[in-house]
Structure formats: structure tokens, C-alpha cells
Length: 103
Image 1: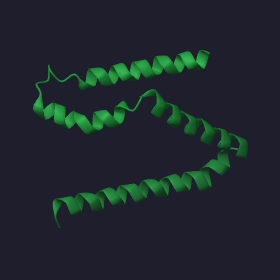
Image 2: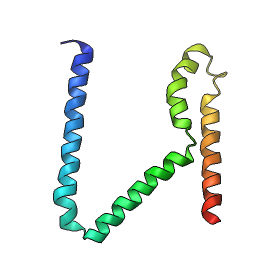
Image 3: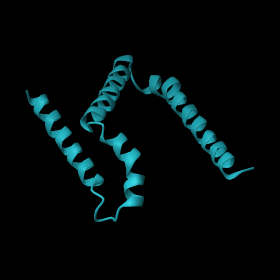
Image 4: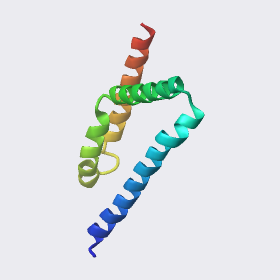
């Protein structure tokens, strides 16, 4: 078995295991310990946090993941300014989000 095929097989096992654990949590454990309103509130808060975290980053995560390997292989570490600009985008997005929340 090739290396890629072996790694993808192992990755598939872990992903299906994670889905199984999540399904058991949602179908068996959550109804036992939470009321329907608490479970709904949990899902709403989780969905809002994912939504706002995507907005706060201003799309810089995708740019960082896509371009960092190119920057890292073609530039010296001192010339690579992509992490700096990514952090600036995070800070700017956070400040804008907090200002909008206060308004």
C-alpha cells in the first residue's frame, strides 16, 4: 500500500470515528443532560461564534494558508511579512467587530 493511500485510509478512520462520537453526543448524551431550550441555545451560540469568527478574520486565514508556503520557500524569514499582515487583519477585524457591537 502506498504512503498516500495508507495515510488517507487512516485519516478516513479518524474522520468516521469523529462523526460517530459527535452523533452519539448529539443523539444520546445531549438529550439526557440538557433540555430542548438549552440544546437550542448551545447550537445558536456555536453557530454565531463560527459565523463571527469567519467575519473577524477578514478572509486572511484563506490567504495565509494559500500563500504562506510560497512566501516561506521563496523569501528569507526576515523578509516574509505575511504573518505580520495576517495579525494586522485579525486585529483590525476584531476592533471593527467590537466597535459595531458597541454601536
